[in-house]
Image (cartoon, rainbow, N blue to C red; front, side, top):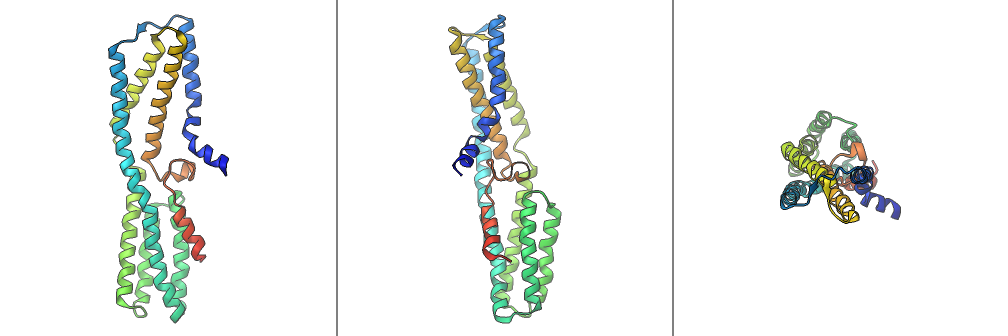
Length: 255
C-alpha cells in the first residue's frame, strides 16, 4: 500500500526521467564538441521569467477547474442516493413489482455510471438511461407522495447537469493557444540551456537539469490536471478526481 502511494505521488516525475536523461546526454555532447556558443545574459533570464509566469497562469486556471471538479462525484452520489432512498422506503412499506423493477433499473444505472466514467459507455447512452427513469417515475406516481416524487425529479435534473458538465470538462482542453506558447518557450529555454557556456561545467549541468525538470514537470502536471476525469487511460492512479464515493455507494447498497 505504501509503495502504491509512493508511485502515485511520484508518477509524473518518473514519467519524465527519460526526457531528463536525454537532456543530460545532449548537454554532455554539446560541451564535449564545443557547441556552447552563447553566454548567460539578462535576456535569457527574462525568457525564463516569462515562461515561469505563463506556467503560473496556466496552473491557476486549471486548478480552479480541478477544485470545482473534485465536488462533482460527491454531489452525484448525494443525488443518486436520494433517488434510491425514496423508493427503498416505499419498497419496505409497499413492496411490489413496480418498486422491484425500479431498484433493479437503479442498480444497473449505477454500474453504467462507473462504465461511463471509464469511457466504456457513451455520454448519450448514459443520458438516455437517465431519461428512462421517467418511465419508472410515471409508475411510481400513484404510490408515492408528490413532494417525494418532485425531489426525485429534481435530483434527476441535477444529475443530468453534472453528467453534461463532466463530459464538457473531459472533451474541452484549457486554452490551446496558451499551451502552444508555453511549450514553445520551454523548448527555447531548454535549448538555450544546452548551448549556454557556464563555468564550471558541473554548475551548468546542474542548472540545465534542474530548470528542465521544473518546466517539463509543470507542463505535464498542467495537462494532467486539465482532464481530471481521464480514467480511461490511467484509471484512478494519476491526478484524476477520485470516484471512490460512487464505488462506496455501490458497495453500500449492494443491489
